[in-house]
Length: 225
Image (cartoon, rainbow, N blue to C red):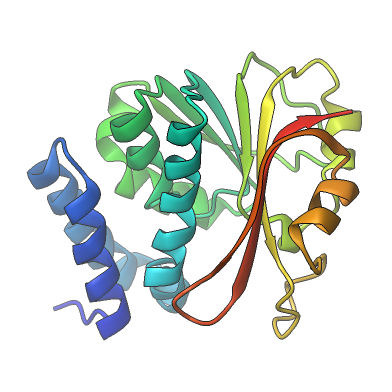
């Protein structure tokens, strides 16, 4: 028996209202993920619930909505620090016809769990998760968009540019000013500060959203210097 928090149950239901394809298969994969994590990765279960919230879903839907408005429909996505990638992968594939999402993580448990959530897309060759610290190692491959929804958890994106200067892509960055968490090591005070820190000079979108949990979320979409 798996006990979801009320928040995670509601977030999951809302998520499936936005998924247009393969709902039954995805729902079964999600159910099995919750069961497997409870049995095999019990120490990760609270983190899984933290990743499955209304606020987490809101921030991922925000990305998709703004990319649609900008008529940006990428084919190959580099996802930086995508964690369990439970919401973002299918939303990108389903809503934007993305062909491949490559999640770069430093947490092997997150990688293994992300493969459970995204079993269908892993088997189809549309999702991959690699263990790599992209701030100190080069990212190889061609990507037309780089998404980092976790900028507050890592060093500024300039480190990524220095390691992977050949990547010519539009960047989607999210961060926050919420400093209450010990792993929020790089908060910013506004989308303008996020853009400045990440050297985004050709700004296609800049905005703030107050999430369901009260957190200010900042997002910038554009091209770096």
